[in-house]
Image (cartoon, rainbow, N blue to C red; front, side, top):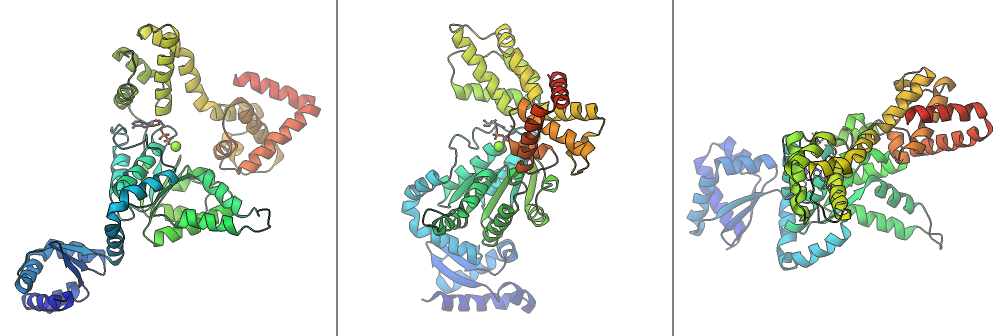
Length: 453
Ligand code: ADP
Ligand code: MG
């Protein structure tokens, strides 16, 4: 029998049991979509119906359906878009594996980063839980998910873990890109090909960024001041968001501290859930080291006192913790496979630990030394002020950061109050040229270099 007729009959049964207000609120606008394989699927207009109907009326609906069909059904309440999604997924089920294999290649996901090798402790358990619930319910729970925290705390790892989980458990299309990649793709639209057209690249861009279910965009702080790119990102974001596609964003700072970002983007980033990943404490650092050692399957043992030594001295950047293990193993191999002891670890890691610690503070240290020398404040150095008593020291500081650290132009720009990378490049070039012709400047730079070292 036609499901509409069945539902009309069942609904009449329900009507008799309820006040007219309750009936019109909860049953007026729902339709029975299908009765199949023991499941009755209802189409409901709003998500509040889903919760209210299943919490309060499951028994009543099941009984009335049983009266008109003679069968017990499990109930499912779906919104229109969920229903469309179910229908998209179902008929293709046999192909899921093959298709998701395809998506994997295009998704830029790193299969080595997953939930099972992400070590959880107090500092990151909220971030991990949020990531997992987004992975389980893409587009539904927290949209967008905005992860932020210092470098090396596992943001990229968690984002890939979400992507891998989704690809493994559905046939959704996932795309992982860094904000640099996004900008490059966007910029290439505006570059015409040899026939003078850019049609293909526009097509390519739209296809790549609109035809997906999950967009993961890493290190959004580098989207920087490139305003056209920001506008395009805004459109991409809005399009995906309106289609209930999941967006996951990471940054080294909170949305409000993204100084170069348009206000409307910051607002949207706060629509979903914003999660701060904190640095791992001592216990978690040790746990991460132990897990990495197990995963590495090394021939040599790494004793507990060595793990404690690394966990106490290396700071909280997990990337550097991993670096210590790699270095230690390499060192012991070079020494002809000697056992790893605390003495050996100290011998091998002292320099690494010291440079590791100082590198992190390099930009801040250079800023401090330069501003002390010129007797201005670090805030002024990072500000937008253009008076030459500030702008000139700023250019020198930028130049020194570029020459003495391995940081990129965008990263230096970010550390100087969110300046565009072109500003940074310009400063470096300007000081480079001037110091060749200006002895005083050359001397100042030499002196500052010595102070910094
Ligand atoms: P971020 O993107 O925050 O700078 P990454 O995700 O790149 O940091 O992490 C740096 C390295 O540390 C990666 O190799 C990652 O696997 C590892 N890592 C970070 N946090 C954890 C963790 N909680 N458990 C296991 N590995 C971690
Ligand atoms: Mg990262």
